[in-house]
Figure (tube, rainbow, N blue to C red):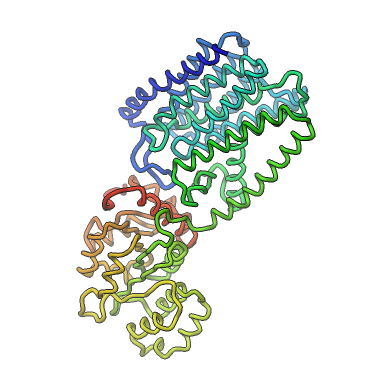
Length: 563
């Protein structure tokens, strides 16, 4: 047992000492992860931490991992090194799914050549394909889980600890040595990777962790125990990354999206949507991983009937959780500090309606600002906005259609007054001033001052740019310490128009599509389609949660961030 303790301590110390070195090198080389729509960090972060994990794992295993089969040990080291190199190249130049798959396949073949393969059926024609599927699947499962500070390293450490206990009890030297080295390397790195992360492991680390956990699952066996009670043990130990991969694959296929495409739809993201902080999410998932390890140990000591019934029960629970988490994904993101987020909206054109609906999914305290005059919202657009704000849209449309105030001779002020007074609205429509010559109305000033988010979007020429050009509106927006969000499919052009009408530095946050966001170098948020209100609600929720963790006034975004 002391041998395994030395391996874990050595790996932990090497990772602890080596990670700061990779951090310095990564910064000098520009090897950093930049903030983007699907990432939770807000500053460029070094991402060579996986190299420290590799060094800690390999060095400690080679020095202290005696008593293992030399051939198998060479296969583990060679395969792990190859998969880490593939990950390092991908971190640097983005290989794409197919080259990464080829690298994973080559690493798996090295394992098989060294004699490491699953032996479920004792038939190479069946066992070799199962081995390839297992190795590639677990590599990608851990790679998928590397989406939040401290998550992949902590989940891998939990699984490695479970494998170590199971192997040590059953006298398996190689499995216990690999598990101890992996456990120590993860903990040494986790000190720098726990939220807020100072460095990331990148694919260099996540692919290596997945590869090594797959090796542990292949090699783990239970001498003297009925295989019908133990065949599922590796699957249960790695149940969390397997479940996460299954969840996002089903979800993306259901939505017509490629499973290889990244997205904020992992189990960690969905828990965060409920209002949990980063630390609470990862600690909750660590706990789940540890619980699965205990269940695997329990199954290995049970009768085949009980073990398989328990495994079947886990599958049923997993399928239920897939359904439940899909439902959570459809709901608007939770505001962490206020049960009802306050939103002020300035929009125009037909494109403003889904933005308004998205904001309404998040807010029950809504203020829509409208500027009177020739460039105001046309009556039909105003009617559509009122219907969105109404608790009963069909009834609202019927009342509006039958009102003389909404005929061609009705004034804008009369129309808004009627709607606010007679319809049961979940928000308010406010004139910025009572007449074209007047200043900013008191109600509009309060809406700009006492709000949590300010959303701007739609056809900017209708209502938006004329509104932003008003001196008092412009001044009130700039004095606000709230996020001023532009939602637009062409943010470069929209920012330029806003800069011309209202001056630079008005916008602090952006919501746009993936394609438009590729030209961005600053922090931005994605909505797959700005015409889908649920996508807008999700992006607004993420902005609010990020703002809830920040202090001070938001920094303005300049049009100069576009290439």
